[in-house]
Image (tube, rainbow, N blue to C red):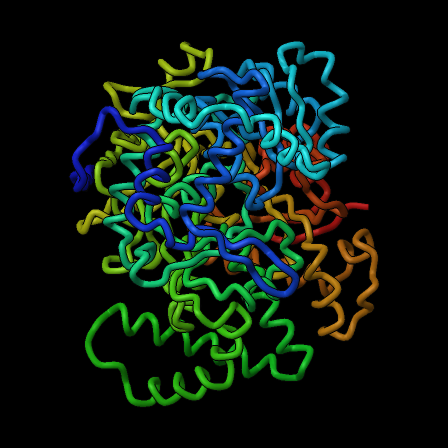
Length: 609
């Protein structure tokens, strides 16, 4: 197949805007709990009516502060309750929010706010203010600067006490479906970030249709709840947050992943939103904890049984008695403890931004957690396709959501059309024109659609490597398999116009000391020393061998180098969603790449001092 489409199930409302989602939720279920704020070791619930009252009060303060309909307001804040409060307050005031990642550099802050034409900005911490202050002179349009941690939200609310309710009601209704709801900037993995114009229709129509398709996940009647911990500045979390308001889902926030497990234990969400790296960390940490307790062999056997059990379930038919008995044993000994560590109530997890891999999908499925892998970009308001609770296929990214169509072009590129596709790139008509073909958005990703309409991602069009022998190689296939190894932080496959494929590898600084200790080595070993250690090289070689087993010899990695550093967002090598900036890495490590093709025999890894 080269085409798949799911018709919309909710009629289009051309007059609706994103603020209506909250207003209608309040009208239908004012006492429904929409949010929960951290309070000591517990949580304080906030009903729909209470949330809207706070939204209106803050919106009044924005009006009193001079915010006009259509004004752009920046926000640089971690994932917390106030983010969503400001989001809806801006819509109720008729304004437009422009997210900035809380990890962004001063230059990135300046670009987002200046390109969008922001006239105000919310900053969370003193550190955020310091970064903004470095470039404030280059942002003359920004006349209001508010800092959340200094209590400025309360001051804004106090300033708006005289603004009448009628003014907020008027402003809340100004925007129509086709109007601008937000400008979200791309991660910049392929160059300077572009501002994606997301309309109110994108949020409204996608939320209303997705809520039907994902009813089992987000239905208020099922007591649905989720704990958000990925950045709300990213379209993935932002859309889910809006969807939860529409669906009446209880939402908590935990910006510090170091406190994630305790928060999961007290909040007890029914579903989670995460990127594949989180699932890899959960699995790898569990494996190494078992190893340190002398039960590594038991865990690995349990994992093998879990994967085989899930595969048998997916295939249908009867599951062999021996496998059922083994699974029952490990379910009690291993999986029950993992479920408890995640709050004990998680039934689903939504995964996006990169391929998860069938192995982890089957593992978590057997744990009782169905991972619904999906696919989308900022330009598609997050999801274009997703596996559904009632219709899923592990190893794919699902089927189109209602109101969305996908098509595979002749060169393998994935094209998208529907209610999720953005309007345009802000102030960039040339890039906008280049991004569309006959009304279809060109994603830049490569994929295939099976006979049941499920999409699989095979690579990124601009990242295809062509070796000197003319072999086309998709780096993602190799990189995803290698990165699943607990020792590996990041991996970049290279070899364009070279005689064979190579790779740059970094180690995971969190898992490295655990692995070293469990393998009888010095847990305090410096990264530079570890990158040269024979045992570490051998472990990474195992990961490379496993990846090579998935491809032909012409596509396999013959050499790799372990870099004695860590790729980070601060170093300029990762985007805020932890995707590699391939162009920057190739530029900064050109010498190391060239070294792969000289002075060392092929098929052998080595490290650099």
